[in-house]
Image (cartoon, rainbow, N blue to C red; front, side, top):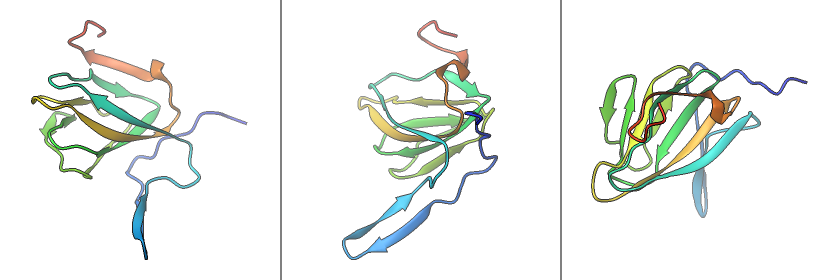
Length: 125
């Protein structure tokens, strides 16, 4: 059995469901995914990077973060979903005096060696 999975070309549609107690949003169902919460310190930024073997969905958990995807930069609203297709350049930063977190759902084969750093303020590019 192969352990590699092809990342989707487009963002899978999240499923929302209301319950008497509230509700939920489901981002993945029976798919190969890796889920992380990424925390960025105030004034810090991740590398400008891309991946060949995975696509990523970022969900902003805190206000004040900045995202960049294929040259477009913006400040996402809390709970805003940011789709990053495989091969897209992307970066996450916390430019203000507050840090922040995102939920990351990676679709496809997850391997830290799949990070191609295009620029990095910490000398890792």
